[in-house]
Image (cartoon, rainbow, N blue to C red; front, side, top):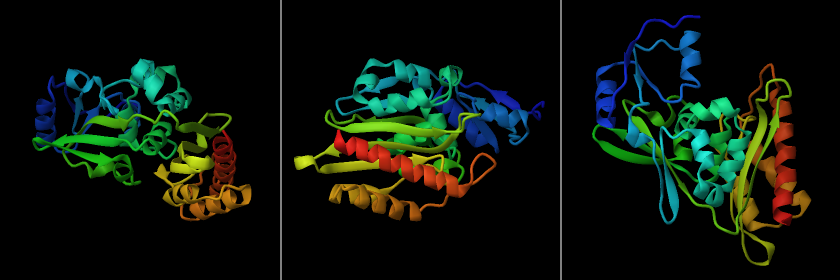
Length: 285
């Protein structure tokens, strides 16, 4: 289909983009365009204006610090995965990225864009939640930061954005002794997530788990952390039956989605099996 008519602007600075956004009621921001272009073509979105962020160079930097990295909102996923420090210090993000989309999508898509869209099956979103990412937001001349958990809540717009622009994603580096992985059950035909989990564990003394961060996507209504399961892991014990009981209790607190690809019950079952197997594997490592 052909999109409805809209005004187009390509600002060169963040301030110019923010000014245009405040002037244009109902404007849409264009970053990688992986979701917006499809919505425009199918007329599921009909903004009065599209503000293209691709000429704002200040949004395209990867900045490493002593404890973490700031990833500009326009950094492409492929570029992020090629960064040597990211590969070394954020292995969970890289493992997730390899399972997300395909090379063409990763050459255009951005981590910030994935968080803003927060699709139910979002691979990148699950990793960002498990890594305790923070989202940097600019608007009205000031900057604020939200945890990924507060930004991705299942409602749109993500983060309650009103005339604001996501400028970066902040990620702390993983601990050297952390154990992490991203696991995904895919639909055989289309490759979309039926159930996914991003898990990061920090071992303590005597085989205990000092810290656990677990985020799931694909199966529930939106990507989210499992704080009850995280607490159970740090408390122990770790026998299989206790682990399964803790997983079932955590899943009882979720709302599962069903569609023509998989029913809600099937998604829940697959997620439970995925979590049980993956956690037992990581705890035994």
